[in-house]
Length: 543
Ligand code: VG1
Ligand code: CO
Image (cartoon, rainbow, N blue to C red; front, side, top):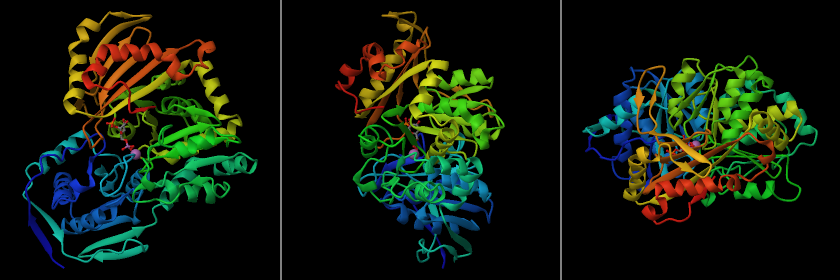
């Protein structure tokens, strides 16, 4: 076995987005493409010889091929050991858990999250640091800079590693340990939640359905929900991970998790429904014929955390991404704990958790998590909910309505316009930035614009500044319209419009969000000139 140094030329497009580098599979299949990026990671992080790396992915098409390449490159770059999930599988939160538990130098996670998989679909790769969290912007910028000047990479000439058998092998002088992808993670969940209480809830006739969407969480959910918690067989549906997610779009929302939605809104619906995404870090929570918005879910977890063993000692603080509704802010105020507002993307929560400034955090995009790992965590959120339900013994809907009555309701919706020509999308954003002065102070029906800005964030821990994180139109009553370009897509541009209106009046809390936000949506379309500039009169997805 010898180490080969292969000469290469840079690809100009290896800039990591919101969560790593995501491209279509054929892009990654170009000669040297994946290798260049992996070498750029290794060069940027400069791990000392003999360190441990964690490696795994969501099982989508190209996962196994990429894992073999990365193993051989890790061996050629001086790693002492790689912990790789059996079959190449590790959910994103489980990878974070394994990095932390085994004190690895970092990890490489292969995933394009909720984007479809398959030979012509999406693939992705990202580096997570020793805290288990996505590399900070400083690191991802260094990786991008390296990728633009790379001239060679190192790889070991060796046969492929058997990924399906647990145990240790060697690759050159590096050890490869194939680990059970579920066990460390499941153990962590048992330490945080009262499994006995959840077991007796399920024994008492409480019914649940978890849709793994043929994605990575299947084995995790089967082990935890069916085996350890004793839910009826079949409670976990679409439990076998498939390379193309069964042709579906593994995004847990009302549009794409339609199998589950039909069950939860059908006759004889279970008491609780949930789904997670391609890499297992997102979650959707449903009650019987009832949808919990992710922003409300975060607020509810914070408000009920004292009921849950792992969090009963109190929360240091909470954090939410800027477009996420301010529902959690009011809970923080009531609990008298700090609430941080960060740019979109989990990488901004890591420093806050490492510095023990926050315990829970979340995003409107179906992401919630805590300092138990440094990624958002879909199954964790489901177990947190089940633990609350086991203690409170009320329905999901009753708990949410009580919450609104106490704190008020933030009506919330996000409109996504996918696959827009990049120029048109940029044009909308520029037009909005050019309109700040004209908009400020303007009245639209009952809404008055208080201020507008392009969100920027100074990390309170390391002082780093992140600019251009989304246009905010802030109204005097606390309502907000936000415009942002997605950083995870692989085709054209995706424009996201986030709408939020606060309602204190309980007699209006029963309204449908689209109904309550009707006027507001018209304002957003009007001020952005979105329809004329993009030629779209309907969003692709509404959540
Ligand atoms: C989207 C979401 C963001 C999330 C990111 C990664 O990013 O809006 O909140 O952190 O996806 O999620 P963007 O840039 O497309 O808006 V994923 O589940 O990688 O698990
Ligand atoms: Co994801």
